[in-house]
Length: 489
Image (cartoon, rainbow, N blue to C red; front, side, top):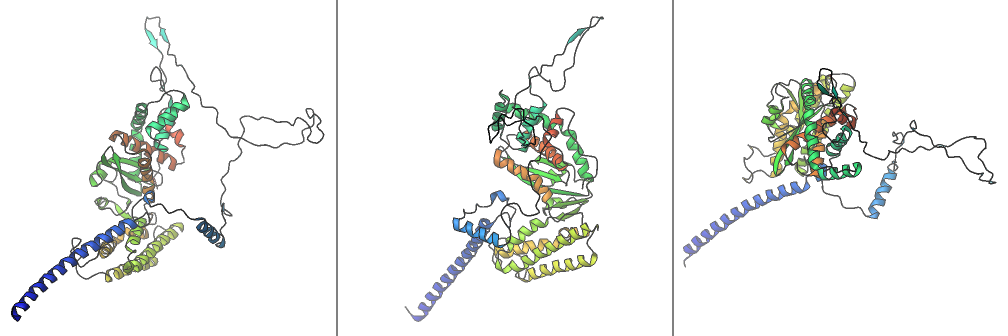
């Protein structure tokens, strides 16, 4: 083989090695992005993502030495265990007794003399709070048939609770709803508890019927809540997934500090929000997490939840390259929150223009710093196309969103009545996730919606300081409690 042939052979092999190297580089880039994605998933928790706290990994149990070290650190910080000085206590207060039982001493503790006729010189009292034995009280309602002189027989009218030859009364029905829809007991366990309390069998079918009946009686309540939400200056909106059998459903909430509306719908987006029927003509401010379908309600003003943004910033800030600008942006959002709360406490409807201008300038300056850390040129459309890491892509997405939607994120500077978080809506949905965790999937769409309707009633009653059991009892007696006809905050 001549020198020229040898050179040609080596050039071919070099080309093959270079091609193989390029292929391996591309594969390595894809694998690196996959590893980054998996690390993000493993590191996601309620502090840096939208995952609920219930899905956070369990912390390992502390050793005895670690517990002692933590106790020493707590003592050195000046904070002692237990109730802190000045904190309000929580204890049982004395009440007016229904019965007084006197326990006189029988004989003298020193000489043994009989004390039956001795002078009473003082007393010591202790009060025991107890419930009476739970027993079913059976009432026969007798509708008499009376014969008129004209020959016509007339039968007396039964009260509303006497709906069948033998049936459970309003108190039992209210208790069943409370156990199912407030305490989230599964159907079978609720039936078991009631059967043991009442001394008579209670079927799961009857419990489902009670829920359906209550939801039907609450139609007027739901209409009232929708009307008041439509007039509220600020409404919080959010949604979460649930299961009906094997199918995915979405629970939507619209809420204020005094009102809660929960609706189950097959869809998550704009169609579902339109079907609920509140936001179509709404002209106030909708507080949400930045999900795009809410922006389609153009007649409303929009504000974004700072807590959601903070979680996204913490997630992006886990990459050292972006840690500083994410931390600085969190500081800006906290400063905006404090400025708004200070202005609201002083009775002002907006933050002072000079203060708002400084905060807006800081906000955009931090965003400029973020973009300076990113590669030049347009962001690649797909993952694995090279030029951008997964961390850079996430940083670009977040910074671009925060620049485009700055007016929504900083809305509270212009209206101090608008909170900087969406906790009101998130609290409304929290019990839905608790129900899923305890009772599992709903068995039917009708059952899921009945639960949502009754939860709307219970949560609204609680927000207005109404006893939940009393409110449930009203459904079967005088009619459902209705929120006062005042403009909801």
